[in-house]
Amino acid sequence: MRILVTGAAGAVGTAVVKGMKDRYSLRGFDHVPMPDIEDAIVGDVTDFNTVLKATQDMEAVIHLAGNPSGGAPWEDILQNNIIGTYNVFEAARQNGVRRIAFASRAGLLAPYPKDIMRTVDMTPRPETYYSISKVFGESLGYMYSARFDMEFVAVRIGNFKRDRDLPTHPIN
View 1 (cartoon, helix red, strand yellow):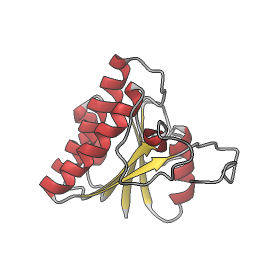
View 2: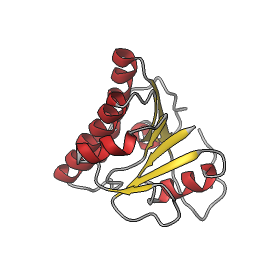
View 3: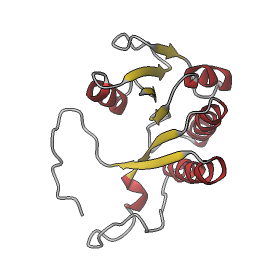
């Protein structure tokens, strides 16, 4: 399977590429060079034509690109996480890519009391522009799935640390 990994040079992206490179044909996409990826495109997710080129001939996309900061200002989130996410979905659709995995965040449920078990059917409660962008991405994915018969999954990533193999706290 040919898979595009956006944000391939980031913390999660490098872990995903490392774990998948021996099993799949990967293309990396990021705004910085990716010397460990043979098929790599340096570009910006806000540039639709570059994203269109990156999704060409792919069978799936793992969308990790965007501003990862919970404290990022609205303009950064709007450009990188909202417009960029739209560009990835629309470019994938135009190029016939049928599968998208979207990196969301477990923190969408953080405002709920700690003693409540969090489940997928709980309403997200975003507290930052970053979290709002993740709700947007999940909703966009569900819309593309329904309207364009694409396969979509949102993966709500928790506390990701590269130097740790296992979580330090039990999962609720």
